[in-house]
Length: 118
Length: 109
Image (tube, rainbow over all chains, first blue to last red; front, side):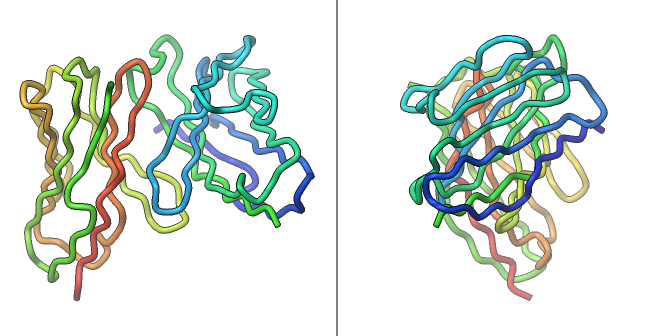
């Protein structure tokens, strides 16, 4: 089956630093990848939709200058949290959908990255 | 507004019981609906995917149903086991995926 990986699985950083999270589709090419955020005891919320070779589409309320998304290849999307603050501490999960299927078919989810900003 | 809700928020059952988790969605124009399992601090594991044209899907002890007209889906777990303890999320797939808040399940040995 389709496998999506994320790196790192956990990261702890100081306030004010930037953190990059990678999302890779290991055995398929994903033209569309999605980034979600989950605060403790809350459900997942979509942050942005990332299409290979174009700018990401951000959901309302998500700061695009703070959460930089780069989808440079069909197997890799990165999320960079710039100038991280404690309120950015969260669980970040990416997903990828198979080419030509956009958001209307199965998304394959990565294992998530837990970010803690001190 | 498209919303997905789940009840109950938490459920505790003794081992061996059959149980039903409920998911409701406000917009019936759904492409498909997925049920996921999430263990504490872990990512999502996809359990079942039901296309809008389907009524139910089965995998092992799990059975998920979909009723678009009433905006409801259920996840039935047969003969529950302690290893089933986790948070179960349903997600409606429209132009984007909308997740419910989850049901936290505890199966007591």
